[in-house]
Image 1 (cartoon, rainbow, N blue to C red):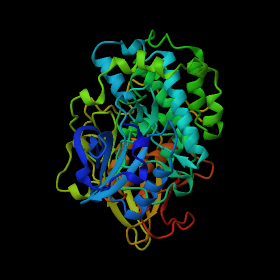
Image 2 (cartoon, helix red, strand yellow; image 1 turned 45 degrees about the vertical axis):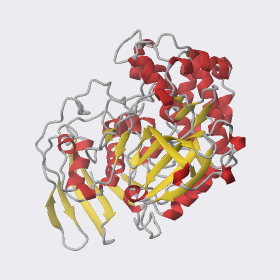
Image 3 (tube, rainbow, N blue to C red; image 1 turned 30 degrees about the horizontal axis):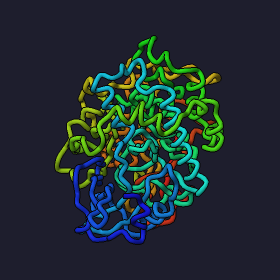
Length: 509
């Protein structure tokens, strides 16, 4: 039955009116379940968010739901209603029986329909899907919203060939421009593979161009079946994105020279446009829709014949089982997403995965002020990273090239660094430590700082990103100031000058 038969106002907020069926998506603190709305017999998707686990307050949720309820576009999944069931928020949305593009890609690879190194989806299919996604993004951006989680897993297909943007992760990531950076959750779900550099750095604000970067990564994903750097741990992804050249199709080729030859220069140029490191150089959604590549896009009927019919419908698939996150360093669920959770409540269950991710380095000496200087030693974890977690210094990935005018790299250099930030009691502390380019890694030192209780686990990626930036290309004043994720739930007003909610990294030599 079409949505017109049940208007938004008519949808029930009684859980007894919904017959739950198979699980079709999940995140660290949420699950999406297919269901039947009993009064009308309509099929729906219900996202059940555990409010206790995700740590969001009701006011924040209301804002997000209001944003969702205002969305009315053919390329954005329809929101019907929402209500509270015990400690869960249930959000009722339209169910698209074709499932996600990621589901279809995985099915095609597993069933042997395609050779991933030759390319998964045909270029015409990619153009058709991405044109519809761009229309959805254009709608978001014109209404002052950012999606922030564009990827194949959030592109849903209807049996009628329709393409719609959704978010089946932990919580809605559709946010107002004016709300960015305000009260972000303690739990971050998603993978850094799709993140724009400016989001990783957290050095300042960002705008809707972050969606264009994610769109470019998604284009690579549709062609190759994977996002660039998906095989690496989170911190490695961050470093490769910030240090290296923007990814291309060949980034996913594993050194195979003949890979992805079937894709045109037009397609590659479109990807390159989206993946400009400087966000100001990326086109907006309206401009991108005019790109020559999208003239290849076809109709809904074409998608039905050449894509949707190649995979079983959602109702025919088996339930997915959710992997439990194993460490603060991040784990991947079955859809390939990394999950990062605040693990303070799990302190009694030490993770070997987190320990093994710490490189064996010489102890970093830190001095904590402001009153009397007190020597503190960061614990030295003498472990070797497992083969599945390559160390940045030994990985077979090509080393990032220096900027044209950069000073030649001195591999023996020891950096004398000071991280200034406020403690839990709001005291301003200086944490002084050394970074030896030859023996240390950014991941290892960041993990040591966190293990010693000197930085919050939520700030691990941000501190690492800025440490990496300072080491790779120090600014003229030898200082970097950046916002801290751990302070974003604090009711106190943030102030960059006094470092309330911010940290400053200084190079002393």
